[in-house]
Length: 538
Image (cartoon, rainbow, N blue to C red):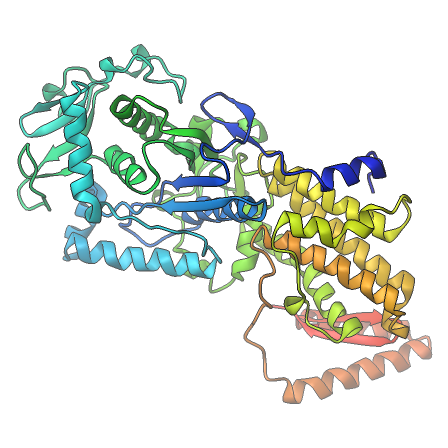
């Protein structure tokens, strides 16, 4: 276990307010997190275009930023979290025609699917889910303001943003305007420059349309987010999030619209998460693997991301074979800016790792007679500091209390450093290892231990629950469909007894054969000082 920090250092860190650093895509550097309004934070995350069922890629951003909100709230901030839903778009129109239904019917069906998946993943910290079609008045008003300011122009019922009017255009993606010149798309003949983009599109026959000062039509994609973020968070807010593939053109265009309209930054910090990549299915889902050094390389990650077009299965199908907590852990087990590698094998590896915690929860129940998931824990950083203050005062690197406290300090330092959940998850594993070691050393399962040992154990377990909660992990006991064990239990107990007799008689071959046969049936034996226990693993 690392012991580079002294007790004096760790005590100071635990009792100091959070010093959170955020990597800002705009500056390409980590910056101290200082909200625009002290104590309050506004977060806007670009959500899905709801034309087909959600897949795992749609869960990446919501899970990551759900954890960001949880950690900021834990650190004492009042956070408002917004995820938009794009329910009017060319893809929606095409898909609704193909399925013989209205765009509104399709959007509702797919939005309901998205919401059910978020619920399954434990993403329940979102305060607002604005839909474009519910905010058409705000979108039209925003567009008119840009026209009035002379940074947008009307052409045959369309409205375009004049990129040439924004001297800072390209500052997020770090692309020059010359590099952005191209054919200009199907409406190139109406534009002043190829890089100009649509704020409002005139209606085509048979397509959904809304009345506007420029005639019937519908909004462009980018203006929707500028309008809805302003409505809910104001013209300037703290954190704008999204996938790395949205840096250009979507977020670049949002910045141009919003900042030319208001004359101030749209968002103080731009956070972009890495994209979901196929880990070992090259050529099937998402193409080649993304190299580890592709962090921040939007083009490399976008070219290989898992998406509907590359064969990603519907998320509801994934939930049929994997626990939501397994998927959530997968998404949080790496730094959010890195690519996330997905495969069935990786999910199995994550599930195996989670068993370490689930076994500990069972052990906690055996030692204390209480449920880990009902154990009181600190819900704020300040409260957590107070609860573990006695551990922080221990000046002995070999004392379990000092080690538990040091693991907590490392966890907080990892999360303070640009929400490094990958490193923080490693600290959770270290903490559960220390707690298991404490049970063994103090022989708590044999003797039950004295009051001081039990109090130390419970306090350490409470710290584990406190920290895991900031990632939205282990909030509730996992409920699985269990095989009726009214008949299987006596048979397994009998085999365990036969195995014990075999070992007593030094017939280790038979004992191993029984264990192996049970393992093949997903029945796992665990030999303990007070006997052998068993469980069924999915």
